[in-house]
Image (cartoon, rainbow over all chains, first blue to last red; front, side, top):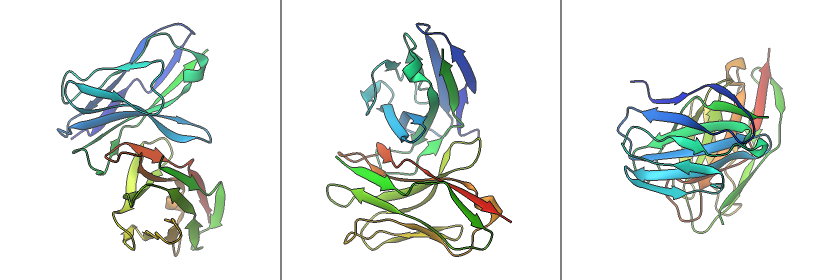
Length: 113
Length: 113
């Protein structure tokens, strides 16, 4: 049981480039979400999904896109990276709408220059 | 909307010292309250939770009591160990409930021999 996995662990982008952060879970969780962690600000919710085919915006969705075609995968897309998106990104999953324990991935550290 | 204010860090303690990390919240109703812990280089993991007023959550020697009179959920441990060195986050659901969490800014704890 791998839990929540994220790739890549580290990434450096130039301003304007695009990329996709991958997230997968093998626990058959319905709920998945993306957070960003910035110094002095804790974690902030970017987007979330309550099941395959259903996504919604969190607190800080601008500049990010998501989709949920399967229960297992929840990729986060940066269409045109900006320095303000330099952060550590965490994917999380849980059994249902909850509030239930959330299981976090190890994170992706993204630097935009 | 719902929000949480957490004690600033870093906190440095000697092994076997008593730990308190303060957390106060603003919320509509009486949502569940959580403490998550992040060990170096890892994602967050649930430490403990309380689902209603006067509940006490506990795990690994840590405790926190849901106090609606003072809107607080302070984390305590009677005798810390070096292995407790980590960042601790207080959290509660965003307004509207469910698994969408809002986190405090995190408190870094360093325990020395």
